Image (cartoon, rainbow, N blue to C red; front, top):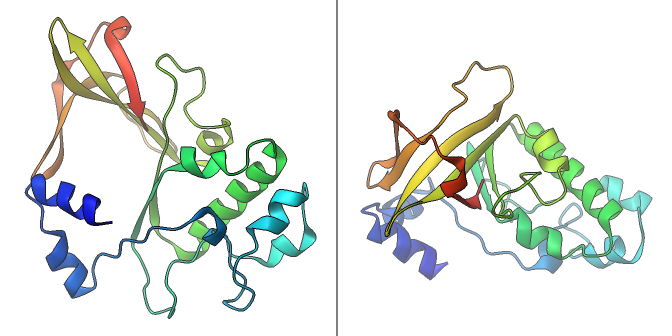
Length: 198
């Protein structure tokens, strides 16, 4: 968590002020902590890992947002789905079940959610299994572009359910104000794109 806070400071943001005021909460969860049951039974990830589908898991909340229940987030950033899916290696059916429960959980609390994942350099799917991008309302791809000896960042809105959007890859950068997008600077050569995250 300290490293993330330092990275935010390096970008000119002030995470400590937001954390102290209660507007920002950063949690680092172990794999064993991704399920909890009414704050009673604690860790139940092993039940999911040993069975394809455990009916008891239908009653579990897939993520512990806040121990005291007083924090109601407007935005959630989960980094990363790639790391999460690795906990289910060899249990694809269980992972798909978990992801579906996770999306339902986010819908229930009414937050806007950003789920980060890594992909191959030239992907055919833009998430660990493809089910994530199917369930998501939007898919945004961030690229690192090689132009001779330098690199630039670019962004593409691959999917945005219910919204009209430009189907182009354009320049972007992360600044102290956040992500700044430059729609007039179109990236036209997809062979120069190296995939980072969505």
